Image (tube, rainbow, N blue to C red):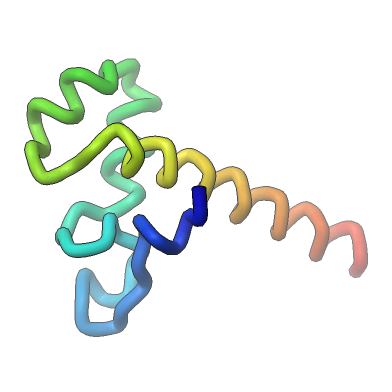
Amino acid sequence: MIIMDRIELDPRVCNGKPVIKGTRVPVSVILEQIAESESWDILLAGYPELKKEDIQATLLYAKAFIDHTEIRAACA
């Protein structure tokens, strides 16, 4: 899966925060709900515009963001 096929960063949408492409659903909202033990099925029911692949892309995006931060910290 190519993460950026499902996640977009556009300064005109949600102040440039990463969102699910074609929606105004921020990645941070999905991550927060997962952290609060929300099931994927409940997420998908609450946001009918989302697909399972969007949740997967959200988690992969967060992982890539964390990995990039760790690499920068190690190089400093």
